[in-house]
Length: 615
Image (cartoon, rainbow, N blue to C red):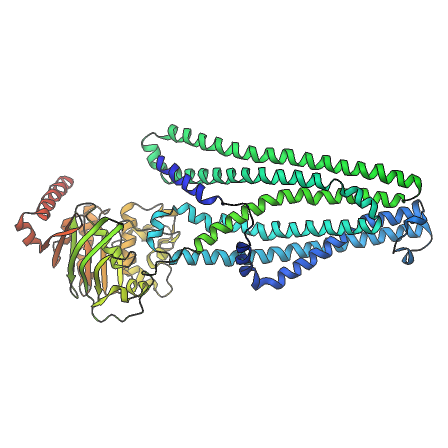
């Protein structure tokens, strides 16, 4: 489990932003995705401004009702006086009607604004998620070798989701809060500039409390993100290896590790909660302090006749209105922190350039189906050669077999041939041309491949055989299944070829999944056929049943067969024996047996094993 915790630590480090500043470059890049929907964003902002302006009308109408009708005061005049009736009863009804109309209009504009902003945010997220997935498909296999899959899944799901919150709940809400503050202070200045100055006296204290909270919340946020990343990585590792955990009775040890990480997650969240628990009461206290100042000074001025009672009541209502956005800004700070961290991770992925060597080449026309390795050297890591000076040729229509001990470099040959990796020295020729002159897509179109452990996708059996390619007919799928000796099993299923395939091929045996991979390669007529340990998970009876079919399918195709069971390659035209990354032997089956070398030893050992299994 230590490797899983190491992955978790790597993920945690990678998921935490280095700075809490809102990088202008990130916002600029986010704007590029928002720009196609700028009209919708602009309409949403306009509606937000209207809604904020309508929000400050309530206290103003309260002031009018008090100063004109309930407790008339000549010092409390309003611009609405000329439009209102003189009769108190009619005037109160008119003010109530205006209040109702303002509330209705505010609700309508708010509903349209929310719908417009969410519509925009969902389209932006769709575009970003599509670009992330398309970019991941262009990255070289080497990138996936060193990057945990859970981290990549998070990029296209969770990180994109927090960006949606940035557009719909973060920036928009902050803009709304700022507009509310501006409108409220504007109304307060209109009603009484000197009482506004009294209320503003608490602003420095609010600023100090908010600054302290911001620093503390930033550190707490980092700890929470780190703990979440470690927890997610550990859970993914455990669920993937649940069979091994139960097989070796490792559940208690895993539970102890989980409890440790879970406790770290709890502590990090508790520190974040503590920051909020201290901040909100402090803001509430400052709010009451501001209201107390309003009552103290405003009440004195009301008694002295220098201020109307309606204006003082309006100020008390505005006081509550002003502090609510300040509290909301504290909540939105976490949204912004999370969104910017997600943006950094997403753009970090998008800035990962595809391997230029793997993307080089141009479309080519295959002139002859031949393959040649010329003095090929390759290493996954610098200095650790997996293949050393490997040379061999596969002539058109020939079947070449590659054998060797585990780790000899057999499967690496296939990865190099399909341009999943680039060689460091030598040449690989396909159709007489250097493989680097081909695009990876054009090279792979020439090959049908059966891997040792084929991946099955969620869908039907037919979709897995044809890979949901509309150009592959049902007839071709059924013929491929029959040639792979899989048709009888498929037809025994309740839905036959439309039977759903569960995650990772659940419901199918290991051998049946490998036969699906075999049928998948046979469904397309391509000049090259590569079998990479294609029968390693098939029992002897099934292997014997498909051997003749495979022999027929190999006719007319240039084939490379990497075999664990040597009985499957007796008919190969030539056999190459790899040993520690070098070509140790080559020749026909009979020639290699006569040499008494590595191949002969492997063959004798497997013959004994197969005889024992048959017995």
